View 1 (cartoon, one colour):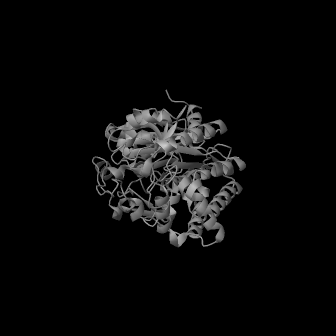
View 2: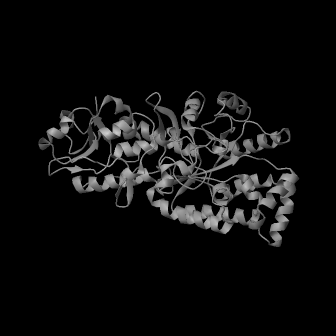
Amino acid sequence: MSFRSNIAICIDVPESFRQEVVYTFENLFFPYKDEFTVFDKWEDCKNYKDVIIYCHESSPLLNENNKYDNCLYIILENSTLKFYSCHSIYDISNVLFVKKIPCLFPLKKQISISSSCRLLPFDLFAASFFFLSCWQEYAIKERDGKGRIQLKSAIQQKLGIIRTPIVNEYLKLFENYARSLWGKQLEYKKMPGNSNLFITLSHDVDHVDWTFSKYVKSLRANRREIDKSFSCFIDIAKNCCFKKDIFYKLKEIEIEYGVLSTNYFLSDYNTEHKEFVSSFIRSLEDSGFEVGHHISDKSIFEGLLKEDRARFRNYEKKIYGERVHTLRYEVNDLFSQLENSDYCYDSSLLFAEDMGYRTGFTYPHYVYNPNEKKTFKIMTIPLNLMDTTLVEGKYLGLSDDKAFSELYSYFNRIIAYGGVFSVLFHHSFFWINSRSRLKNYENLLKYFMKSGAKIGACRDIYFWHKEQTSI
């Protein structure tokens, strides 16, 4: 039995696509305070003032439209069903631009509806499913040297929308129709701390230290970006022996501003670093910071996550989430293995080449398993930005000043979307230009806080989402 809610959704779609539709409803409408309830029969929707009808192009719900009033129609066409019958690349020539937003699966057929109703010009649910489920990644064949799908192969790059949360934009278009049809302004849930935007702050502990020769090699590789000030050369000299101090300096800065972060640790470190790692993990846990697992970069491809996870148990007390080192994974393999291990969320979904949205959404959600036609149980909190993307030559290759300027500019554009903005800074990032980068990091935290955003660990979002879905 369904319960009374604000908005009813009447669906009439082929059984072959029903699980995908339900998955999309559950994730797409999660951000709203308004309740959405799904029905299979129009008779169950009669007592609802606001109704969405999602049906295939030959549905009786279209043939008998005169008896329906104030409904928003969204049409699932046969061409869309055909596209989702196998894994193939989406033809961007089929995109429809609505208010400059590229909409996948635009309505091609002429549909007649009551004058009191509205018809969405594209399939909101099929388009959102495409991004939320990472559907395109099953069809992309090309890989980089680390076995990863590259941004250049993704539709986000082809359409120039990698920095745009496209699923949020689809919701905005939907909201415009809802407001026009029902006079209804949909409300969003507040994020933790009663904020509109929550920033998850994280650090991947890829390295504890470098040998002198490796550090010098890194300095040479980054010589164009090294500050030429006397203080910087003093810091370089200190970092030859005291790079580990950066771990505690970052922690102190975050404590000073009252924010907690997630630190993802590898399962194994060199023998000379293990004592430091154990000590630092204890200091984090004692201070309320989150400790997560940084899955070894070959574990997913080699199917060795269980073994990698078992080695990590030597360090931690309770783990909630993980991130794959160097982002080496394929989505289905990653989440399939995560389900068989002790994890609650993943924070690996990012194209390393740019800031942005691999799943097109600013809210935590779940990923769909098309092979078994079900939703994976592991939540994803997609990563949106990492420091190496900004400064490394193989990616954007920006100077420090330009990198932080670009970050601020990007943040100012996306803050209005709400949801989660997930940021990663490696400790090793601060081994170069230490003083200025630490100051820039501190200023960034202050800027985030001044904007009204709340900052915390990834597990805060997991707990929040779990609480919201249990209400």
